Amino acid sequence: MFSGAYTAVVTPFKNDRVDEAKLRSLIRFGIDGGISGFIPCGTTGESPTLSHEEHNRVVELTVSETAGQVKVIAGTGSNSTAEAISLTRHAQEVGADAALLVNPYYNKPSQEGLYRHFKAVAEAVDIPLVLYNIAGRTAVNVENSTMERLSKIPNIVGVKEASGNILQMSEVIRLCGSDFDVLSGDDQMTFPLMALGGKGVISVVSNLVPDRMSAMVKSMLDGEVEKARAMHFRLFELCQAMFIETNPIPVKAALGLMGKIESEYRLPLCPLSPDNLQKLKTILERNELI
Image (cartoon, rainbow, N blue to C red; front, side, top):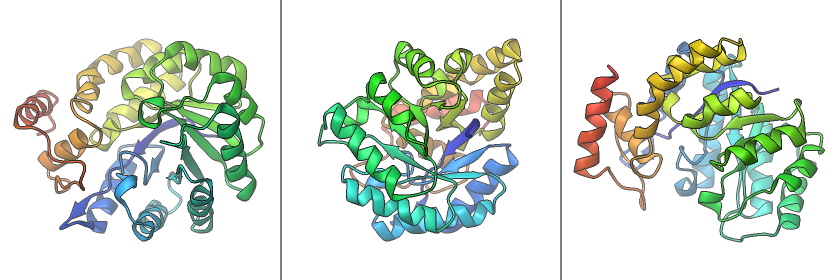
């Protein structure tokens, strides 16, 4: 159902308000670059500091601007099951193609609690759901046995795998089968994950280079492994640069240097350190982006 390169799109701000014009421009830039879809209101979109009204507006705007040209997988996860249901219902109402549900964070639920949380959201909506397994941000990992159980729920169709554990990724592909879409949650892991049978990536770096990331993923989907490997290594330094500090600080700094948005954040996120900003400039210059 979901294969290709999807952009976890940033939320541009200007004077602490969502910059809707710049968000629309980023979406058009991604579509022109061949991207398969967008994830508004994910971690890269600074969802923790968006009000509910802003969150819903960003999803609505993304659906409107894409106009059915590519897919929209709205970030609707929460550590409150009731809130996740509410956000996911809104995404369905405004026409999102699917929703992305991050592990409930801070609560540290058991595996049974995780299963019941995701099952409750799935039963409350009709749209497909993609889970987002990232223990590094949520303090809890959806174990493969739990993922296998969840994959049997009809509208839970895939997972954004950001564990960083290639063994876990391999096992979830084996257990859940080819109809369950495993997408990389880490740009640098896209090539090896797709070599195991992953379907693509939910990408940060494609905010900057949608054409390069979509071409690499397409090459893998087309079985052009050597071509994709070469692209993987050309992208590697840029992918690493996106995590010299906490995401989305570097990607927003890079977009600012490229003139695409204001490099504005909401606390507790703050601008890159001067040393890292200089490193980022050097990498962007080397990659012919500024």
